Image (cartoon, rainbow over all chains, first blue to last red; front, top):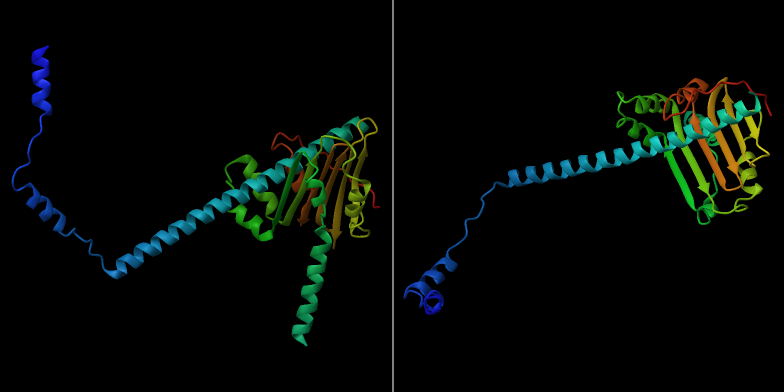
Length: 93
Length: 176
């Protein structure tokens, strides 16, 4: 098992960073991130598109709810009409 | 003078519309109900919903055709676990709003066996159907459906064959 211990010790032994490591980290941190340059009109257009899209989505959602309510109301009314018909048939066969 | 006349006409129209739309003060029943169904759709909501109904689907096409001529649908339905929750006064407050000569009952079926009572009332104005009320009550059930607007009996019968409802036999009833 000595060879395994040796391998592990070698793999896990402390490695000192290169002398310029600190300088490289500081340089990287100081580097400015690239900023997306977008003209104001594009930002406004994007905002309008997002708002319009959200509005259309909300309207569609509301429409689906209204449609479902109408269908439910009609289903219920239809089932009551069915009952009326059955009762009438029972009274006047 | 003209605005006053217009206002008077608008008030008269509003009054006529109100006469077809019943006041369904049944909120006290919803708290006691084991199941309830409450839908109020005015004209604008119906027209809005109509835009989302698929004309190719037979059920939706039938409903789309039906809602084209109506101004509102108001449905309240309650189911109860025990009997005696709703009172005859609840039924009377609806019946009392449907007065002759505009309103007439075209169907009235009472079942002594299961205590079920079914009524269909129609509001006629200028020879046209301007509203329909379907009342279904049983010891553990209270349902009222109020359809406001130009609902022809044909349109109502068109519901037959859709939603699994067989075609309804039209029957001319007697005035109250």
